[in-house]
Length: 437
Image (cartoon, rainbow, N blue to C red):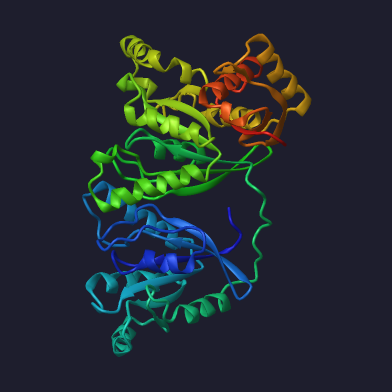
């Protein structure tokens, strides 16, 4: 839990809340599209201004009216919950459209909360439009800020006011995360359910409707020796299944989250009895980008003997790859093995972070060539030394006679050899070949 003051952005849909969040945030970015209801789960970032820091939180559209749409109702409820915990509420309204009934209803609720309220009148891109801010004075909020989040007009004054009204709490001393986990998979395989189970709170909205999660949700978990950052992502589908610009952007942010991670938890619906082409591509992509990989076969409560046999048969052609990755059967619904997921992550992280001596690596690789010499045409491959350059991922430098002769098949030979001698299940190995060290 952060000890910083919480500044929460609220307002009805499509008034520019996410645009304002992106203007103020330096690291986390919210998806912005010109139609309502894009933001669902709240996202947050730490923002500093005038030597003061605060936690900035973007929410989905707030409405006091209940809806029969289960997802929109959860968005509404989460926004209301986050408001209760705020130190300052940035109540964003659309300066072009003026006050509408929903604005008046939200304003009435905010007066009852007893929080510090800043009325932010957005989309005032034209100087002449500033006259419209006077219409908003009837909402009864003393602190009003005419701005254009898109063009940064008035944002400095808003930040000044925030810094003047928050306490002098200092941010917690930042420690490097023990590891960064990303939950990856197709839509509706249980990523958000797993996130909620690991956090032991209803952080992400869960629905049977594919595509419920739209942007990465990042949280930290205290575990063993340090913090784990865990990121839930939007479901990834095949390109030909992606029609809307929004979904394309969701997939793009999911892949960025993968590249920023150390460990990928690829969730698969085991009841389908196979890994789809898309899931196989995600698994290969994670390993090719040197990310530790654990495949979690979720929905194990639905498994029958027939499904087990079908899965075994369908995975047989990929046995060469599956033997390199860790797997686990889980059920987010029944909680089967969910409590063991982080232990599995820790086990893989230890392997991902291990260091070998250069002497043992050099002996191991030279011994491999002594037992089975490799040739390029009629020329024998020679390894002079092997050094470990880094961990997470394990990065090995091979000093060889002719680096150009060490192609994918030769490096695959050494990859298999080191795995034969060490337990590196779930861990990729990165090779660099040079003539001199």
